Length: 134
Image (cartoon, rainbow, N blue to C red; front, side, top):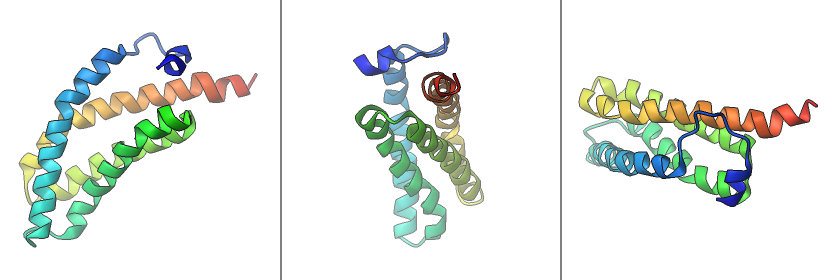
């Protein structure tokens, strides 16, 4: 966390405790909705192509922390969180015709990841792109 604290961040950056709290709320929603989709696909009640964006989303979500805090690669973390955002939208679109409530359950996740994506891109800009332009 010392490395992250040393980074330049926009003034509206939430405190780490708040970020952790938000994820504690979101992870059960993500787990429940993805488990439902995977179970339906496994039982052949949904095409596997509908489960694909949910699987890619979980993968991209899981690798974000090692990329950001392990590799300390802000540019790659920005790319990864963009994948998380795109796969949420993609998943909402493909599940809509089968189980609308799953798409609706993704809305808080979508809102938070949209905010987190803007934040990550701004942190990347302030610490990687902007200094290299000097």
